[in-house]
Length: 170
Ligand code: HEC
Image (cartoon, rainbow, N blue to C red; front, side, top):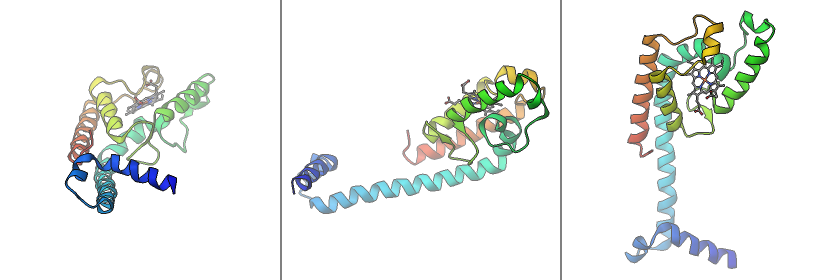
């Protein structure tokens, strides 16, 4: 009983004094708050699906070629993986890269950040050319992003950021 009262008191705090002051029925307000969360979640899901559809079509082929060695799941290791020293470096990079951003399950990526923050970091990559890391480019002559690929990443991340912001994400 005591916990129940505590929950009631807490939910009043959540619902906010203004609703309460309007004399609304506590119970219905509570349901409304929960419903709104569900609606927001659904909207985000729809937004993610839209973003992922563009991702699969326009971006994934680039990432597969240039990023998946570290951020995704590769079934075929490149030949230089066998070169002494390279294996250790790549194993380390793959572990580190995946900790930050794991692209193996498509968008939204597995990450400790929100999808919106990931999109912002990816836009940065397109704008500032920070990925793949330089030492990797040196060992792998065709791995840096072309101008066209960078433009596509920037456009996709900016379009996606607008979609998410349209759903109330900040
Ligand atoms: C050789 C391995 C390697 C490749 C290839 C690589 N990355 Fe990374 N990436 C890393 C590592 C390691 C980190 C984490 C440490 C750091 O930021 O340097 C990282 C971090 C990132 C981050 C930052 C995530 C955060 O939390 O801030 C983004 C975004 C990113 N990579 C995008 C890309 C993209 C896009 C590509 C392909 C164009 C790519 N990476 C290719 C190794 C790689």
